[in-house]
Amino acid sequence: MPKIAYLECSKCGNHVSAETPQTLCPLDAGTLYVRYDMDQLKRSARRERPAELAAACAASLGMWRYADVLPDATPVSLGEGWTPMLRSRRHANLFIKEEGTNPTGTFKARGLGLAVTMAKHYGLRHLAVPSAGNAAGALAAYAAAAQIAAHIFMPQDVPLANYLEGVLYGAEVVIVDGLISDCAKLVGDTIRLQREQDVNAEEIWFDISTLKEPFRVEGKKTMGYELVEQLVWEYPDAVLYPTGGGVGLIGMWKAFDEMEQLGWVSGKRPRMYALQATGCAPVARAYDEGKAAGEFFTDAETFASGLRVPKPYGDAIILDIVRKSGGSVVASDDAEILASIREWAKDEGIFLCPEGAAATAGYDKLLASGEIKSDERVVLFNTGAGLKYTDTVADAMHLRRPGSLPTSLPVGGIITPV
Ligand SMILES: Cc1ncc(COP(=O)(O)O)c(C=O)c1O
Ligand SMILES: [Zn+2]
Image 1 (cartoon, rainbow, N blue to C red):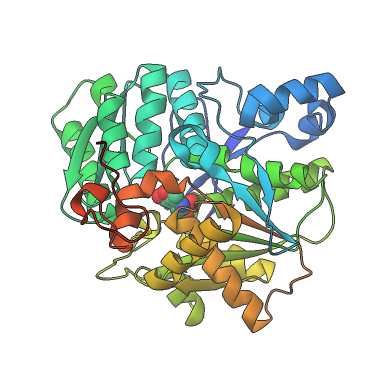
Image 2 (cartoon, helix red, strand yellow):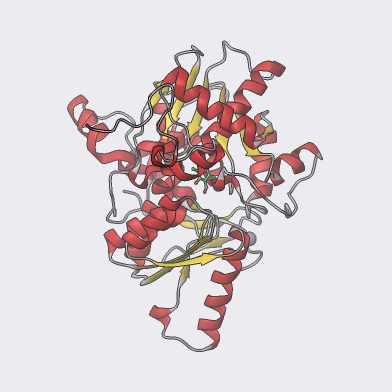
C-alpha cells in the first residue's frame, strides 16, 4: 500500500500533511483529497494479478483489492465492496451496480470503512457524524469493529433500520427533529463546546461528516475502479448516480483521474449524471439555473431519505464534474420514484432503494428525451438495499401488516389453522 504524499485542497490546491488527522483546508475550508506519488505508483501498483489470486481477491478482499491505490493502514473491514454488476433484463446496455450487498446494506460502507480504518490508524477515540441515515448505520458498524466510540445524529423520520443499527452496534444515537443540516450543526456545536471547555484531546469528537475529512471520498473512489474493471477496463458511456452529498460521484471522478495517470484506462470518460428527488433538489436547481454552486433547499421532503441533503458541502465540485463530463442533473418526484421501485421489483426482481429508484426514474427520462441512447452503455448505481426501507416504502404504498387487514381478502389473505 502506498504512503500518502500529501492532502490537497480541492479549492486552492494547498498541501496539507497527512501525518495527523485533518478535516478541511485551513486556508479556505475546501475538501481535502488524498494524493500519492504517482510516478512511484506507476512502478509499484499492479492492475493485473495472477489468476488464482485475482479470484480470491474478488471473493474476499472486497474494495481492498485496490489496496495498491489506498492509504497504507491496516483495514477495518467487514467485507465491503466488489459488488455485483447486474445487467438489466429489459435494457440490454444498462448495468446496475448493486451496492445493496455491502455490509450495512449500502455503499456508505466503502467510505466509512476507509474513514474508520484511518481513524484507528491515527488513534482517534471518538467519531461523530450527522447523517441522512445510512452513513450513521455504517459508521456505527465500523466503529464497533474498531472499538471506537461513535456518536450519530440523524433526523427522526429516518427508516427504522437506520435507528436500529445505530442502537444495535452500540453507538450513541441522537435523534433530531430536523434535517441532516440541523444534525451537522449539532455536531459542529458540540465539538466547538468541547474545545472551549478544554476537554481532554482524545475525548474531543472527530467530525467524520461527508467531505469534511478526506477518507470517505477515498473509500468511495473504489466504485470508480470497480466499475471500470468490471467492464474489463473500459469506460461506460454514462454513469448515473443518486446524489445527496455527492461523495460517490466525486470519488469516482477522482478514481478516473488516477486510473488514467496510471495507464489503467483510456478513452473518453463517461458522462456523469446526478439524480435527485424533486422534494430536495439543490443540485438540480443550481444546474438548471446555470449556477456554480447550490443554495439551501428549504422544506426538503422526500422518502428517498439519503437524498434529503438541502445544501451539499461539495455542490460546486459535483456541478463542475457533471458539466465537464457532458452529463446533467435530473430530479424525479416521490410518485415517480415509487413507480420505479415497483416496476423494477416486478420486472427484474430487484428491490431498489428509493435513492437508486431516483436514478432509474431519471434513466427513463433521459432515454425519453434522447439525452441517453438505448445503445449506450450505462452504469447506474443502486446505492442500497431496498430492504433497509421496508417501513418507508410500505408507508408510501399505503401497505400495512396483513394482521391489520380484513381476513376475507379475495386473493391471499390470512389463513387460519382449523
Ligand atoms: C442509499 C443512499 N443513496 C445515496 C445517498 C447519497 O449519497 P452521496 O452523499 O454520496 O450523494 C445516500 C446518502 O445518505 C444514501 O444513503
Ligand atoms: Zn484550500
